[in-house]
Length: 127
Image (cartoon, rainbow, N blue to C red):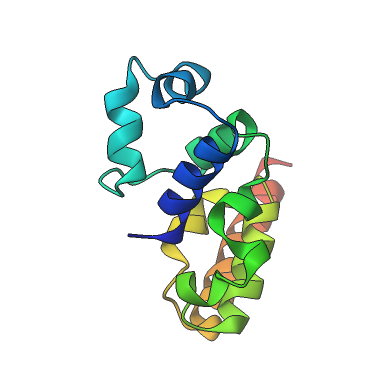
């Protein structure tokens, strides 16, 4: 199970929150979805990670385990982690976040550069 899901469960318990409480705060109908998430049976998109972090009074970085040395478990290469962190912090590039974890840093940077060049050419076409 990914550290993310363990962190969600641990933080919920730390706060004395039930699965039902967390479901309510995150907009889920009942605790069954929270149970599935905590077991790692549901893949959370970036927007949901942010929602869970807010509901659990923490940050997305904490919930992902980045502040306790867990980033090496999520990213294969430390340089990829740095690039992915930039993507995570840039709201316009977050769609790349979930596909970045196992890319080589050179490939990831090439994708970022390509996307930026597309955006620039789009801006020039409009004007």
